Image (cartoon, rainbow, N blue to C red; front, side):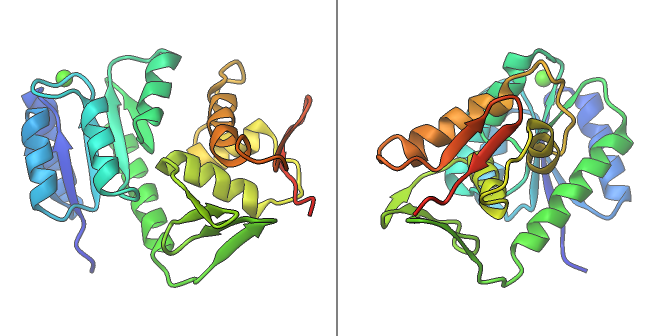
Length: 230
Ligand code: CA
């Protein structure tokens, strides 16, 4: 069995200990840091498969740490633990590069399920598919995770990459916000939230704005479509 090493950065000893014990019982190897800076040190020192990250931490907060982790490694799954549940905090977490989050207090089983889903996804991602997704002059290499348009590289965050991958896989087909929420975030978003529109606008700024030919289109009342019009 492949080794599954998890970094837990959490300053509340009770939660940290529960996670270490519970994840250990489920076959994961767990390292705990009670401080953001120590968490970063551990991350830079050992090869982890996934990170569980509290937001309010001494040393360095979870958002900052998540951004640095993303600079090192665009693909490692990061789950944020937070007592804050407002939309802005969720957006900030995703913007920092988190893949998912859990609101405290949480059920251990729920966290375990999310960990399994994310690890399974990264395992699938590393399969040698050799796939390049294309739409016009836009190219996405699923192996090297490179995105190019007109042969110029485009830097995307992990979440932006997943969103663009989903749009490309559904090229020339309208996808609803609910489809996107389920397939890109693994979450049923409250229909009042605008996190998807926010991310679409991030993508447009990077993928479409510098070019006269737009690829991402809004289908009013229905969702979004990535159209190949060449
Ligand atoms: Ca905390």
